[in-house]
Length: 304
Image 1 (tube, rainbow, N blue to C red):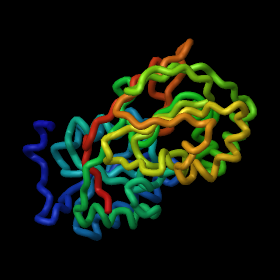
Image 2: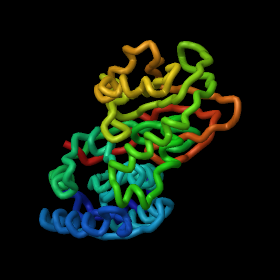
Image 3: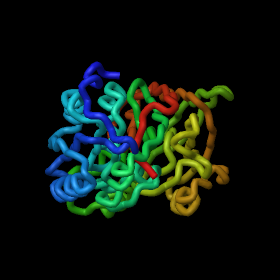
Image 4: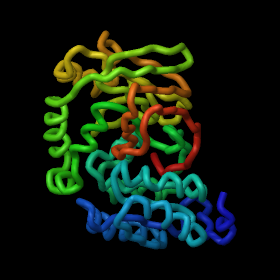
């Protein structure tokens, strides 16, 4: 816990924060509108707002550290990548985290059961409703939803910020088609509590939360507070077979397919012949060999 905590304003008797740090990128697709509406909603509940804008993800945690002594909670306006950027600052300061879902996919907000409307999502902050959640860690970098190697990395590289800002979720679909056309399998060694296997795969993904990729489910019973990670490996002969599996991925039932290897554990290692990028919460954060672990109940979030 930061020493700055001694001078922070205290939450009221119901756990409602007295003053929050509100973070937003005003140049993002919904940033400016989200900032004004969310600030007004919080102030309407009697919560003071310290608003800070940023233009790059690396600034988010720096802002949290700098302002930690002036607030008793943080609210991030943005999508999964922006919330991910806040994690180092949240871990260091111990401040509870609120999410105003203003991004494209908003999978973490969906996992928490928050309304899609960022203003409505502030009801949990106003009520002081917090719960502890787990964080996944890959090569020392925390993540909320999923960290993966393969197709999702190619998709992240194909999605430029300008296209996401203009097309929203449609940009994901268009990029996914381009990625599928060019996709090639790779060989990975997967190490877990049950041993070591070599697999020819299009993607290895390790999930911490429940939702990812705009509403796909990591695994049917996955939860963000279950203290475990869920791995799947796409070992199909043809990437186009994924189209037949889409309904199963939407429910988390893809493990029923022979083409998909699944496992639940608290740590994994994935090695590849040559270094491959690792995508976590939509951002490239590491390269293989990748070591995945779980930090149970690592942060507190505002959620129903």
